Structures are given as C-alpha cells and as structure tokens.
Amino acid sequence: PIEKLTAFAKERGWRYLRLYSSAGNSFNRDYAGEDPEQDDVPALNVFTRSGGTVRHFWAAEMGAWTADPGQDPRGAPDLMPLWTVLDLTPEGRGGNWYPSLE
Image (cartoon, rainbow, N blue to C red; front, side, top):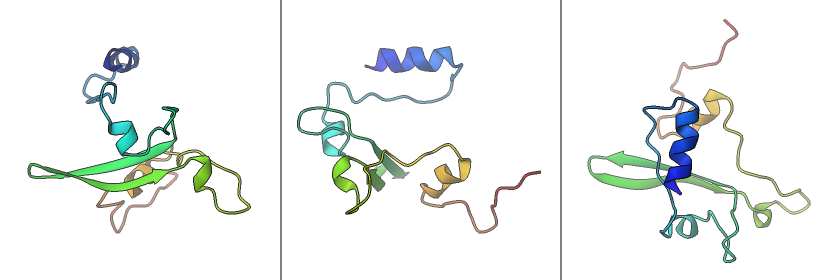
C-alpha cells in the first residue's frame, strides 16, 4: 500500500522521491512482478517518458524459471553500485564516465 511506502520514505528523509504503488491494479501481473498465486517475483522494470508517451524500456524477471540450465536461481540484479543504475537507463553512463577512487 502507498501508505507503507510513504512511511518508509519519511523515515529516511526522502522528500522529493516520487513513489507509486501497485496495490489495487494489475501492474505486478502485467510486468512479471508476481506469479499466478500472487507471490512476489524479483523483477526490475525501466520506463522512459518522451513528451507525453511512457514506454517500457527494459526488464529483467529473475524468478527460478529464468535460471540457465545447471545454474542456481537468482534474484534481481544488484543495484548498489551507481554505475549499475546508470547502465539501466536509455543513455547509460555516457562515453567518458568511469568510477574512480578519488
């Protein structure tokens, strides 16, 4: 529920982050975020907006059924390093952006 999300954001001081909830709609089913039994499925979806049009740009559904033969099932990609987040965006990191230890 959106109330749970906004309380979580408030605890962390996230004042400008827009939050959306999939409660009460079919988003999770439409974008492989839950299975037919309504259990959560690890997934990432990236959307873009151009003018007034929103498009689905990229997705990764990482349930047990997506594991390659002989491989263990895994969850959604780790978004901890900033460059991983940038790699999921349409423009990526750019041509001369590299992490450094400075």
